[in-house]
Length: 335
Image: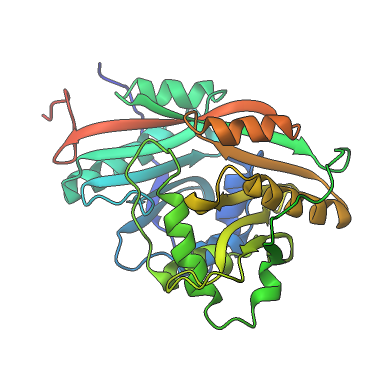
């Protein structure tokens, strides 16, 4: 099907320029996706700390001196493949259906073709009907879902501390005196992530990149994030750390869970639940608020745990994929 993508005569596409573009880009993204606000600081941090070994580029759509659209295209750093790319396209709500999205999408295809891409991915909420129509009309197909759950901890009645069987919990900020903390958490995170059923083969980020993107991410709340310690264990890679959970705070005021898990040999003892509850209790003591978490459908144990704690399901996040031949969507023809 031929799509009549109009390209307004006064629309200009250009590369993003940081730090100048951080604030207007954040303003546009917040208008496009108010459910998950960002700040100029967050965008600048993300820009400064991407893995330099991976490809990433951004294009801005400017009209009449005003930013009206943002496109980001790069390698999937969580599931890297040389021919696989991740994309996000946002148009200001007041400028939709005026050709801005079509122009950015044409630029997106041009970037993929130049790189000989074989696959592209993106993710959006299942309630985003216009976005889904936009993708489906261009040959994208749904391939995976992630469940979102939310809980207001201010009103939640949380159970008391769990029996840890001789183990102990420590906030991540209290572990800064351990010179190997970051390296040990990096190793532990990789062990845990390999067991997360995300519907794709995951890849490991380098230590420096992981620390910058995770522990030093501006939203990170290390005083509300906890490690599970087994003082009798001294693993050469993870030391006494056998599990951990992270809690981050979005600029919109809500919190979200980054990772919760324990090593395989420590599972089925309620320790992941104890980790999550430790963060939730610390959050309550700090004033409480909404907490969000995401689980993949095969992760039935974590989903059951979240439901038992009072988390309520929200609309899914849906992953869409586009299959290409050397950067050109399959089934399409060029003049």
